[in-house]
Length: 112
Length: 114
Image (tube, rainbow over all chains, first blue to last red):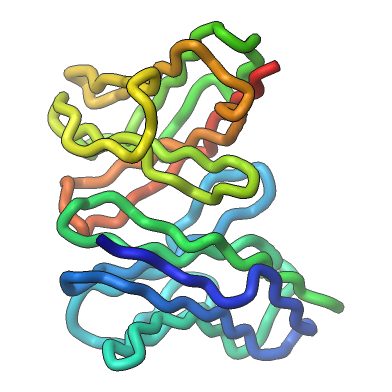
């Protein structure tokens, strides 16, 4: 079985500041890890994914995440926040049973 | 290329009625997944269909059911609606039913049960 914990249900940053959204996972098998973003009243959009290989993964809109097996973490970062980044972000894990198990989500607010 | 589409956008039903939600996957995708996003409960996996067969099911009662058609589109049926079924229902599709395949989501159907 797998699970995801997102630390911080709400993160607030200033425009131009570093964005750091935390995700820890639990999985009995090597996991596949994903970050999705959800804008109000919309579906989920894939930001990036980790399957195998390079542990630093680059995604869309300047986001990246690093897979750290020893820490069971997959934190999402962006060097400089933009107003358009305000949304809810979900970390998800998938294993051999194919379904995505999501964290509770982190609402990102960007202040001008 | 068209993304995942879902219909209707909004659906209002009365407790005890049945609801039918529809999903069309991205062309070439054979796997369809259904998720429920209810207030306070987060995103929960409902069902997975691949090549017309139900492959996996989440922890939901049998009144949640569905099917996948030969053209890979899918339908989710919810019978005997309860107030707590009110939620955003998201459909996703992927190239193949493996854990590594990214799932692409539709905009969702907002179901309101009164």
